[in-house]
Image 1 (cartoon, rainbow, N blue to C red):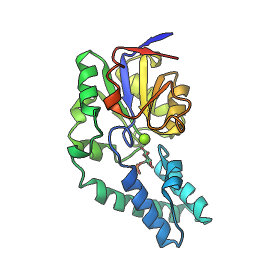
Image 2: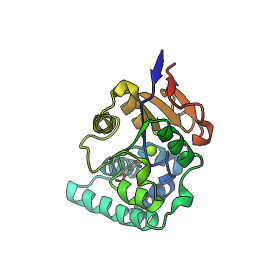
Image 3: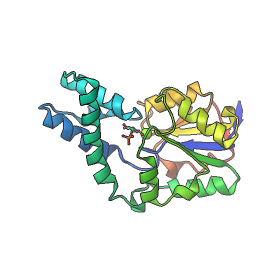
Image 4: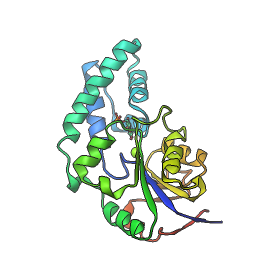
Length: 219
Ligand code: BG6
Ligand code: MG
């Protein structure tokens, strides 16, 4: 079945820019303060997941439990460290091929949106200087249900006025792939096929995506 792509919805962290390393360093610093280690492989579990849910997973790994007030303080502390790191970012950190791909599909009349769990998405996009490449931005400040719930992508489709069937999501996280599938959209995984098993197709990055323009082959 051929699906016409009229809108492309991009996750931000891990798709447009590699912020995972900054998230990882900040979570690791918090874990170390509480006396336990947090590995890069543990960090895979946090990709695409909301800030507070990420903290809960981290505490699960450390075998710790705290009340909500304490958890909010811990998440705020991690976020302060993370914001310090991303405040230094610039356009050189945009992943290879992303800007070219965005310009290419926009020139063909395809709408573009961000669909991210991050509340820091506006700051990151501003640092990267690419806000004007998106028609719509839906981030963690606008949605109440985190991925794998499809809310973020359905809201983007709604704001773009494009039917979900004609939207294709670009995602690096399992939770995001699930969200796109639940939204009834096509989904391209960016990363490793072994992790992103349920995507329609998986690419290493946008430098390999020239072929996915107006028409999208759903397998
Ligand atoms: C997602 C990241 O995009 O945003 C997660 O993949 C992160 O790792 C989540 O926890 C929330 O981000 P933020 O910036 O609001 O803490
Ligand atoms: Mg991501």
